[in-house]
Image (cartoon, rainbow, N blue to C red; front, side, top):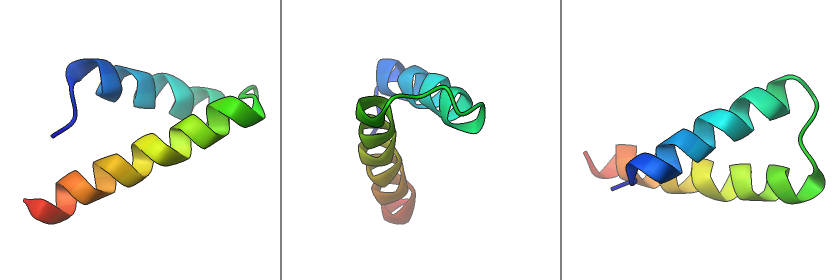
Amino acid sequence: MMTPNEHERLNILCEKAFNRTASITELKEFNALLDHWNNCVELH
């Protein structure tokens, strides 16, 4: 289960990635959070 902070961070990084303003580090964090979110969705 994702925490509210993880969900908020995922949304922030998603917006930055969409706007092409995310750093490489932020893109890696976004990818990790997205994987975590996908795993949560698959379990439910």
